[in-house]
Length: 165
Image (cartoon, rainbow, N blue to C red; front, side, top):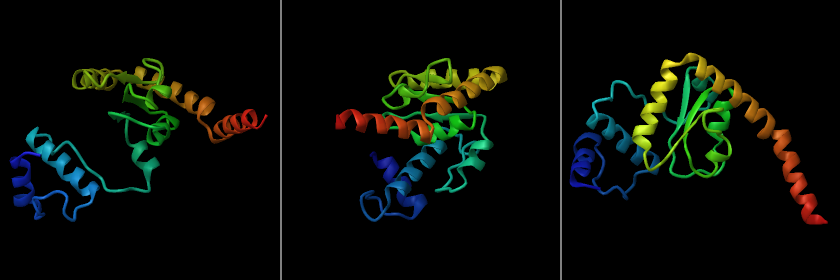
């Protein structure tokens, strides 16, 4: 990290400038993201929340769920949002690409062109209520048909049964 960021940490957060000393990874990311919003002059438009147990309440207030990850296993947050009928935008990476079908139940954007594609996808969904609702309806179907607890349990049972034979 550059000296500018370390100076920011020292001046504004009261923390030591060596990021490896005594600061949780969560706090480090919060500082990095907060600093980024200041640099981009968007700090008035972004809210960083601590750990929450009321995820359904938070998701119900959102129109679009965005997951711009570089890698994913099985993104539970994405499944939660889709189960609530949210339009989703996510990066086309393992795990996520197994859930989101591009332009069917959400948008998949590439990591290589993330800024441009993400901005375009957000603008499209913000401007098109019908498309958000269409994606949301398909998202509910996807979770119900492929990622429900009963369905996933059945799939695991089938794997164990095939291995046992």
